[in-house]
Length: 412
Image (cartoon, rainbow, N blue to C red; front, side, top):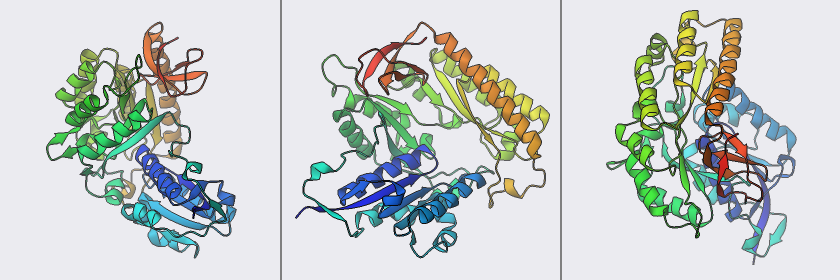
């Protein structure tokens, strides 16, 4: 007897780690006999939630309400970070809502009993991958965080830092490379804290490079690895040396969250570095890996941020020469020390600073791209027309290049 078809939708909110977890949910549901459909037609809707800011929590509640109103018969499973902190809120929305702790989501979905609407006689009818046509795939290698930044609630929702066994990570990467994936993104809540019994992130990267070096076809470049995000204090000299020696197989692009260019604000955020240390790190990276691209996150309008603090942030951003700044207007997250402060920045000041920093981001991105014009980078073909270079700039795809392949492309 074939498996039973049921329709499912996975609604994913939040970070790259959530995206990888959502891919896993889709894989499990496909194995149970599910097929992806729109929300209105689904028998099961899974909402993978985010709670990093107050705004993120609002979007999460809106997503659950939208699922309930769009489909009056589906079971709605709520999991992820917000479910850890606000389970009663979601459970009270409707009898159809099932709140599943993040750590138990895989088990719940793997044991799920669903009544389907049509038989499926062949496993080949089900998608082999949850990638939805994406050309790069993420591997979650780490979860949780032992830091406690004063604006952040994620360390409460995710718990203490944990690391996946290196053997598991390597096996998953090898399987992806053998299936044709040419760019694998390593993700984690605090990726740089990876530690599997003395195997740190640098050691893990070395193992990944070795294990996947000879899996490609004749004349094809081997798969490469991209670091999803790494905290400045976790970038070691050993890691930088490997980045310089790997010849692009570890993308010479790092996302380093700055959050503020003011040392005073960084102290009040409980970030474990100051502006001078960040500047030194950026200078060291530029000297060691001259072609490196650096992107970042910056919070604008943290409580107590003055005009002078903001100018310090702009000055440091210019010095570093980020190729992209993800600008986040500060949003209060109840339960954090920053949310309880009386010196909240007025909305109009926050909006003006946000607009200025986004304009600076565009200026710096254009400058970084201009510095690369005429150079050739190995690029991942995303569509027949576009590819993503190692530096994470979008470039034209060479004519006839296969989607998902790595090809030399000129930055123009």
